[in-house]
Length: 449
Image (cartoon, rainbow, N blue to C red; front, side):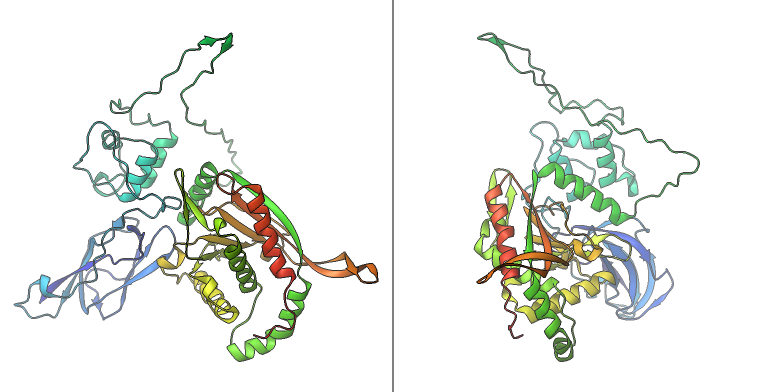
């Protein structure tokens, strides 16, 4: 007999850790090749970990809700390898090199984890890349990290521990932090009889007082809900949001889809929705205005070569997830349709792979699917723009003809573009969303597919 060490496999280029959700096999259970041992979750998707060997599960090294680093040993399996073989000679799962930056939304643009300028540079305590990145952003030194109580296994400091510490004013541990530079309050100085402004220390925002009566129900956010909440707040704190609106006459597009959808489904065994049409228009507009396809790193603008379109998909839980169509500009309408349907179906079934939610450069969200005519979406960091498409409604509209203006019933919809005003000015944002509308309005009703 030999003992096989099951490692947490690599789950994506920027995924450094995962949470154990549920063990499906218990110690003593016999395991066949490719049997699912446990379910894990990253900050984007849930996944299953299959067994690469057959044998008996001897030990689980992590409990449910524990956070595990990629490449860590998570279980021991007794195999039928020859007795003379050591465990090291049994083929193991692929060990991933830890990603240089943890997968927290909005930190993909960070290339290096900042080190404290003074004080300790090494610690005997383990910190995940995610915790280190948050600490670097908040200018928390290693010495200060060492003073924060952790709720994880063996006292490990988790992301929630660090966020709670920051939100509570960084004083709840009762420790005195020596390595941090205290903010200085400058004194007013009069020059030419004009008082200089006073620079005050930034205080933590006060938490609102919530009144709870005996008839109120208190519901804990689920894991994904907490992640989304953090992501949304971080995005609003990062980017200066501006939203521009355009109303588009999409009558030709609607009539064309009505004409081709039955034959298309019969030929391709796929339903064609409006989403791939919207994505095609977006990719064309991005090629016209490539500075909308960027991200920001400090004072540097990173212009993206690839056009990777994220599409917000609703889950049965009510949460949204954003799978990404990589190189969407290189797909024709049939290819876009198949990609959209495949990703949407697997998103609803929680079958997405972590890499399929990474590296988006622009996001599309269809608020019209909820019956809304428009919205003001929040930017999906580190992107700089997100487009919301509203419900298509029949409306009376004025048409210009060679015989004069007439009123006709047309299919109309609103497009709403939220963009980061730090790098996208009103002219670029407004012109871009107008160009998307132009591509939809000028749809060729005789187009073959």
